[in-house]
Length: 393
Image 1 (cartoon, rainbow, N blue to C red):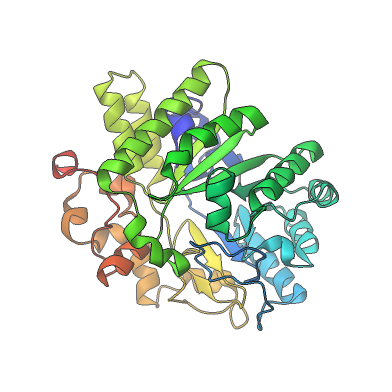
Image 2: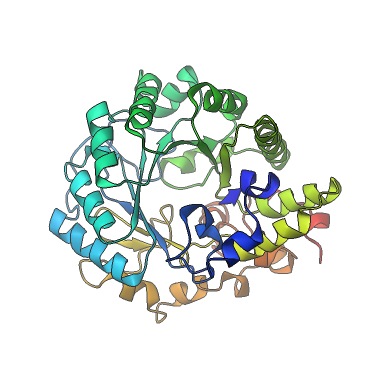
């Protein structure tokens, strides 16, 4: 996760994170990526059921009941353990988490245990009453997925009317006073929609947007050939930087992030060097605090059936099941060779990754993408768009 607005526009300085001691339990949410202890943010895919049919769904979600979902009682036990372990955030996802009848009860339980609770949703089921409930239980944030304007989004989502219902969900959250933001997955089929997404932020007064690079997982694997080329990625990241800068220069302080490609960090830093930015050294320090990709360390995932994964995309490998052992035990058990390797991926990456001068900042980028594209999880991430000259030591 690269905070374009934080880094390029200077809304966060290194001293901001240092002031809190860089411990995740003490950091406010906008500084969590700079924590020193890297206690995992946990994505709980609490259901596989979904009312939409998204072409890039990593969970292969469908609108049907699936067996073996963790019960409410089991879910509360998991949340108790996450809180005791010191996980700062639990992200309720799916499928579509709003389709799980006990979402409110479980989110309330998480908040009561001192964790920040957020949800990742398609937004179509958030009514004014539901939004008010989420506000009352203390939900910190609602991330609503849009992949373009109406025509493009509804094709991606597989259901006509999804865009309009998502906008209604955004409005309901705003009316209830819940922080809400957009989530947009970039690929060749929709990247031309990015300017319209920025326009929507302004028109609807939405405070936050995350632009996700495509990860080849689940149904998203079928879109591998539709991933942006390296040149297209550079163009898109430049566009995001420039539109973010334009907003801030006009006093519209939107939070803009890119996610799932940590090459964005060095790319941003190199751009600031070319521009002669006086803040470039501060940005480098913040990127070093961030440490890049944290799959298996600073982010983890629990599936609907209790399986534990390195992140929400890495579904073909499980380290264990919370029905058998607590998450905290699974996460710290270094007798599992892969878990041990993920705690310091830099020692195991191959090829140009192993020779890259930005390895400490990128963390080796996404292993899931490397495995999907090459069959070798330690090979270079094919979505890294930095040139050989840019990575040379």
